[in-house]
Length: 226
Length: 402
Image (tube, rainbow over all chains, first blue to last red; front, side):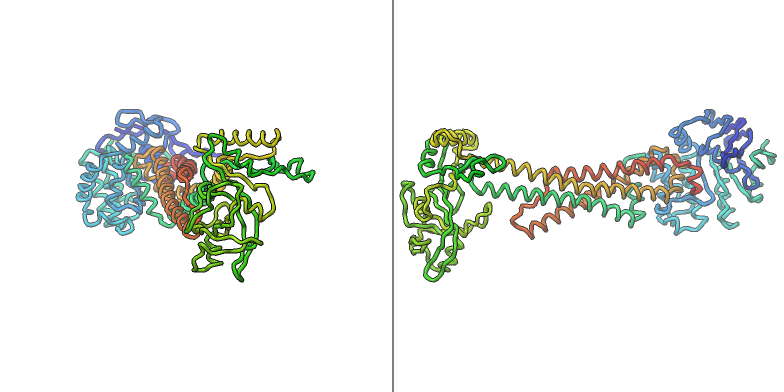
């Protein structure tokens, strides 16, 4: 599903080149549950952005779903993001002027899906994520947990193969955080590959594969995976 | 992304920031409205002049004494010569051109009009019975000058409406006698109220037979001869005939000027159209300013909505889609601004029309089209840069709000 071969990513900071990722090799299969942990600055988020095609590797190859996606142009990248990848962010990233239902609908609007089909899918997602009485509320009228539920519904609306979560519980209290993780883990049943960046060891250790990163390198992988 | 969705998304983000949106629409609509109002004024002035000329008569050819070159000062004037005058016989000779419908010789002078103790200075017009038709005057009551020999004087006069009121009030004027200078004239008719045309207030005129006017002012020359051509197509023939006849009658000297109403009208038309376009163009500058404002505000909007743009990219929007969204916003602003501006402009034009009823204020269609076109053009072209900037944002940095 996801194959990173020898992937590096470096940034120019001032006139100094800083390596954010060093020669990463990573294979993730469909339905895998992977958590990425490590201190800040270890390159977790950079890795996630690379996998999500928001960023490009400086070197190495990235194969997604059998196709080489290393050197796609902007339009092709956008299409892959739209069709195969869902994002859940720490700070939710909901559009403040749109209602919960409209936020969920947004990826489908961008993909050009017909309005009738959109409405059906949105209705179903709203029901599945227990947002029925919140569908017409704007994000500032929702609690943190509800916001993240909207974000997860949005991320799954295009039936992605990969769901990338960057500290999805970072802005939530423990109880709501656990609810959100439960929702994300339910997606594994649909054979979605779930990749989660987190600081929280309690949450991180729930994943079958746990990847530890330091200084842009994977130093260890534990869990039931490999 | 579907067009309807693009429009809806763009209008949603415009509604999301009403103050900003209203300001931009205001700037746009002021630009459009000023183009509409100013060109309406210019066009009104043009129509006013055209109407004034038309009210002078139709298919007119006018013969004036003296050879007026473009500069207006001939060698004769420098030498203190007076050009040879045009006489009544000249006027009669002009009648021989087969394309002439009728002619009206004109002599103008001022005299004291009095009745009993009332008296005032008036402009006296000496002419013939055809003047009524040639100058498109209309008679209120009584009769106009009687037809007959052009050389024959008669002690009759036709009063302008205001003269009648000043001298007679509500009394019957027709049949009464008045004095003009040292002569007595019987009032045979009163003109209908007409107002002003070409600076001459018909209501303040007194019209007498041309021969009587010559006696009154002790002259034999005519102020001008007005010729009405049989149709619009033969105006040039009439002009040539008139020049030819006057040339022969004045011993081969070109000492008269023949102008056509059309030529004068066309000149005024050109000048005033150019003027209208000029003030329209100046107003269009305000549209360009509105465009710069839109660019400015759009750039701020891009900066403010960096996170949203990053999110849209993460959700699978390519750069061109984000560009399209910003274009759509600019286009919507321009459309709404144009519509509001047109409404304001037409309202303003109507108001001016109410205040100055004699000015036929109406915005010309080309100015309305141009105003809307420029509004769209500036709105969209000035959003190119902000839209490109939004499209080129790095999604990772944008999501982080950087």
